[in-house]
Each structure stands twice: as C-alpha cells, then as structure tokens.
Amino acid sequence: MKTPYYLIDENRMLTAMQKIKSVRDISGAKSVLALKCFSSWCAFDFMKDYLVGTTSSSLYEAKLGSEKFGGETHGYSVAYTDDEIDEVVSVCGKIIFNSLSQLDRHIDKAKIGGVSIGLRLNPQIGFSEYLLSDTVSRYSRLGVTKDKLPLDISDKINGAMLHMNCENEDFHSFNTQLDELEIKFGQLLQQLEWLSLGGGVAFTTEGYPLDEFSARLKDLANKYSVQIYLEPGEASVTESTSLVVTVIDIVDNEVPSLIVDAGVETHLLDALVYDYTPELIGADALDDKNSIPVDKINLANLYRVAGRTCLAGDIFGVYQFNRPIKIGDTLTFSDVGGYSMVKKNYFNGIKMPSIYLKKISGITKLVKTFGYEDFRDCLS
Image (tube, rainbow, N blue to C red):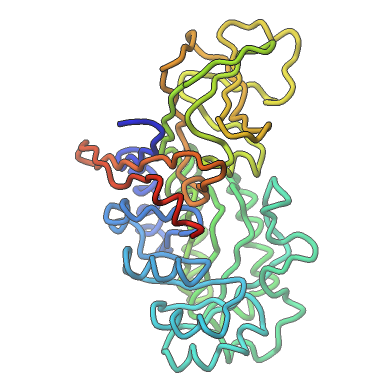
C-alpha cells in the first residue's frame, strides 16, 4: 500500500450506520446520503443496508446516486439549467427547487416526469460555527423565506427541505429549531407529504441522545402526517476514513517541519478552507498552526506537518508526537471521509492518493489508482 492513499474502513463506518438505522427504526425518519460530502461509491453496497438512497447538489451527483446507490434519489441544486432538467427528472424520484423562480420555470417538466416536487425553505434560524457554511445568514441565497411564500404554495409542492445546520452536536439546539419551525411553517407542513431536515446534525457522534432525537422526529412526523428525511453526510462517514502519508523530508527552521507526500490544498482542502487541524494518530495538535508560543517551541517531538506543494500555507498543523519522527515514517490522518475526498485536486501536479476499501470482512482491496494520464487529461 504505497502512500499517499485514502483508506475507507467499513468496520469504522459501521457504528454510524447502525445509529442511522436505529433512528429510522424508532422514529420512521429515513436517511439519504448527502453525496456532496461523500461520493466514493466503492462503499455504497455496504451503506445501502442502512440508508434508503442519496441526495444530490447537481445533475452529476443525481446520476451517480441513481446509478451506483439506487433506492430513493433526491435531486437538489441551487439552480438547474434548462438543458439539465430533463435528465434530472429522469433519474430522480424527488426534486427540490431552491427558489420560487426555479420552481415556476421547471415545474411543468417535473410534473410530466411524475416526480415528487419540493421547495427549499429558509427558516432564518440554524447553527454553524463558520460564516462560510451558514446557510441562513443575512442575504442568503439558499431557500425561500416565509414572507416570500405565496398562499397557494401547497398546491405546487409535495414536500419541503430545510438545511440549516453544520456540525451541530447539540440536541437542545436542534430541538429548539424544530419548535420555531413549527411556529413558522406548521400550517404549511399540514399540507405536505414529506419534510427533509437536511444535513449537518451530528447525531452519530458519541454521546448524542439518540432516544430523545428519535422521539422528537417521530412526534413531528405524527403531528403533521409527513415522512421525515435526514441527509447525513459527515454523520454517515465520521471517523471512517484515513489519509496515510509518508515523511519524505524534514526541514528545520526553529521548529522541524515534516514534509509529507501529500498536500492540504490538494488532498485535505476542507482543512485549509475552514482552517482546522486534522486529527493525526499518535499526536496531539497545538491550537495554532501558524504561531507557536515560545515556551512550546522546544517541546519534545514537536513538529509542523506540511505538504509538498509550493503554497506557503500548506501546513496540516503543529503536533506533539508520542515519539521522534524520521524520514520514511508513515503518518495517518484519521478522519478525512467527509468533504475531503470529494474536493481533492491536482494543484501543483501532486500525485493523487490511491483509494483502498477495507471490507467488513477485514479484507482490504485497492479500488482506484491515479497516474500521470489522469492529471494530463483532467484539463485537456
């Protein structure tokens, strides 16, 4: 297994899958995989036993969900073009439009195709620690606010989607959101067939009160006679996937920097965009990757872990290891399934990590390698 490579481990994914299934068994709420977060279809056969289908953010994701996952295929996009909508209708059972203008523009084709029609609502309440992923921030273009909804909207749509969370681990916060949603949209919910509560609810994390969560979803579904959907992305694959790299050089400038055969911008772009330090097995991360306090510079086994692109800020983080590190050692970033593999890119022409899948049986197999030709042909 030559580095760099991603390792998707079904055994590590199993805990999240079991929690997702438990929520469905207790509450009746169905979960569809958010392909914008994780679309490595080598794992889909395993995930099919726990999720009922997929939800997409584009035509290509909708096609992938229909072709490789099956089950229910939900289509959503901030905006569909006229030359996309026919194909979207052909592969989706549900289509969720982002705006009233998109709904009016494409509703006839959706009806002819026999799909269930939904509209994204903007509840103007939510949770995100990052402005970049705050879907309900001021001026948001994502979804329709209550004051813009026409009185006859229920005559046009069968369901609604609200996506207002990002990495929300607080059930109380989510529960309060639902209370406010009922006040705002309760009358509309009584006229719908289904309601998607989107993704970003971290209900598979350790310690999350699944019984209370499931009970709240069940009560909501029964009160309005709607089918509830969840769209777990990160919650589906948390702690399931690793990026394994090799130290290929060590550069010493006050603090030694380990140069690895990968890059943050190329292979863990999400860590760069959101400025967080990824978990590294056998090491504890310092709070700031760019400024190291003087009293910590001389800590034993303290290293900056850096990529090999020419980007000055290609820094994974500053870590104190439990052992000295030397050239040739391998390092393992332990949680890179969500929003990392889908964003990998060829900046600097850095070698793309191979993809391995460790089956529930324990067998590990190589499912994808990338070579020069892939880099050459990606832009033509």
